[in-house]
Length: 217
Image (cartoon, rainbow, N blue to C red; front, side):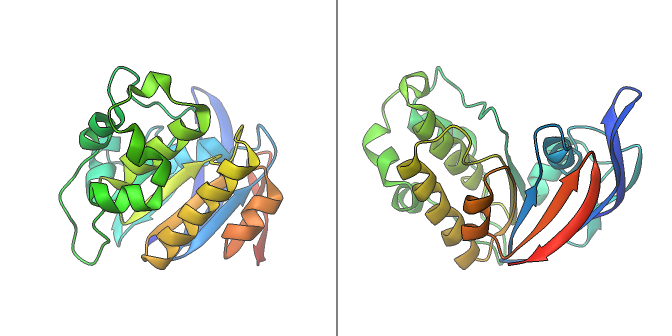
């Protein structure tokens, strides 16, 4: 479903990634592990088209997409949840979900508002609340739910457990496993090894922009 082949990328003249290779299948959860500065977020941004690779290829759902604009990648069905969440704070929870909506896709789960509230029950009672007034954990759930409203075939999650209370980490973990059961392809970057081991089928280790190891969990 999603594959990087000898992917090198960075910012300006500074190279951050060096010939990174990874692959994620349909209905599979894969964790990208590494310390701060290892290149995890840069990898996700390069896959999403937010930064242009220096070299290498990105393939999504059978098509090469590394020359596409981010909105084209999103329309093709790749969702992205950034580390800093980036919700629309002046909009309500319901309005944020509506902003992310895209038409259903063939052979892909369709995420209606009701299904999203089943996945994240805490958001159901907050539909009319402005996103600026949500807790950090609630904002994280909203960001994931808004991305799912686009009915993605695959989703990139950047540090989904960072800064969350343990009970909220547990809820996010359950949501990721539900996505797997629904057949969604999930690639998440993580520093929390115990969380990654609970939700991922296998893992890659990134160190100083280079892929060091792959683990089957």
